Length: 368
Image (tube, rainbow, N blue to C red):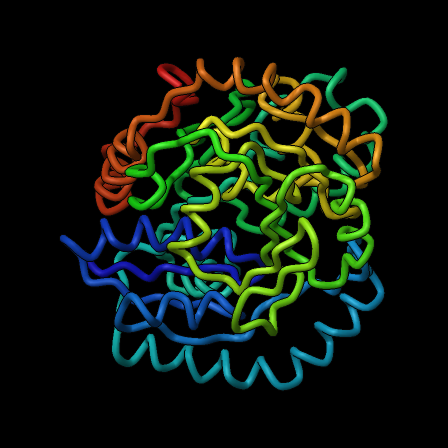
């Protein structure tokens, strides 16, 4: 089977998850990948036939999304990016005629599929916002953000053949053609054996959150910080803070041996922390509701805490409760991606044989 796989480039979690799926797909299928942003370089190191396209980006200041700057940034990017995307479009038509498209919240591959009447399988965590029912008590105070986010998500990949949603929380599905499945985890994470260490692992998606270090100095334990100083080529130690350049192997080792994790609300690291039974203090990027929703469910399940911003009180409260969170995490189990790959294989087979497909609810929630 020939598969075109689209990976959104905003946030490395999509690329990390897609790497896991692609490693499985290339065992049996011919796969071409389109991706943007930092995802392209990451995937090119691991797979052939990765095509760079222009994609949507988000502008940050501190730990917040800057809406107007995001609009301006993308208008400027589109001027240079769309001609490149058009070239990629005709290259794919000429050199590679896919049977199926898989999109990890990526628009170019989706539009290509719709233009050529190719079935699209959505594989991401974002669609849970639109395709599931969330309790009103959880969304209290976030109703407007939720409605806006749901409208955006709903417009992103409408009328796909099927939606595979990776998640560690399981609200009931509200739409057909929807399957909820355990998070996809890298082999390196699946094979890691958690140990109780003495440090906090701190990860920042945005490099502009300059208030963070002053608060972490009061943590009274070592903090290993990734993402805040991306120009680093070696460790810098300042008191109890160690700033580290990103290295995948060392990052997983620091995660495996951490007392707990402090990070945003990104799904990939959160699901890895849950799998390794590491309590997490989640400080979502302001204006990024998907991260807020992840954090709210993390707190609801007792796996960690949500804080709208990192304060001395939020940090000390989390550290005081981290053993209670650890106890709750002991109940969580993962299936080494077995169910996700089985569901993907099933939907690929149905996509090339639509007559075998019937629209029945398929939440996939059993056995999580």
